[in-house]
Length: 186
Image 1 (spheres, helix red, strand yellow):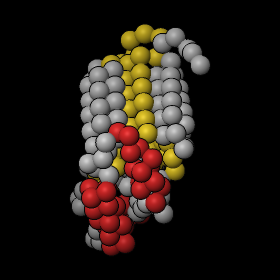
Image 2 (cartoon, rainbow, N blue to C red):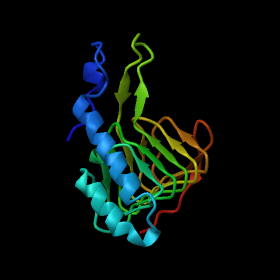
Image 3 (cartoon, rainbow, N blue to C red):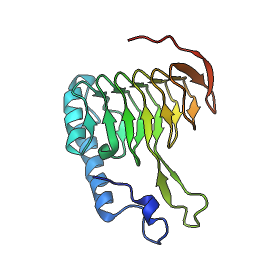
């Protein structure tokens, strides 16, 4: 289910998202709040089943904590052993992909949507986020629309990535800047 029609619709006076899309997200949020948000970590398979039911593509051993919030599972893809930690916000207006062993730590925000500030109607737009294999988005970090986090890259705690992050490099700050190389492994 392709849910982003914001860019196509920005030239009209209609809402950014179709009625069907809005109903899908209402059903999804109700389902997650009632059946998953309160579940203990041991019920990961159950949470992943709910995400798959709403269109997420998850490897069998992906992990998503119950306190995470996913805007649209249809735009989420996770590789083997990828993990979305506690209180992570996955604003998946556009596709968000996590490679194998990618880790998004507590309180981080993956934001694949924004507004067109040049549009007088301030319409929503989206751009995909790709987080490479073995990359780590540390606690309370922010990854903006259209960002690619290279394989093995690290975005330090509370760092803000508005542009691509080089592979096997540690980045920190706002905006994120490279600090040092990271040792390759695995």
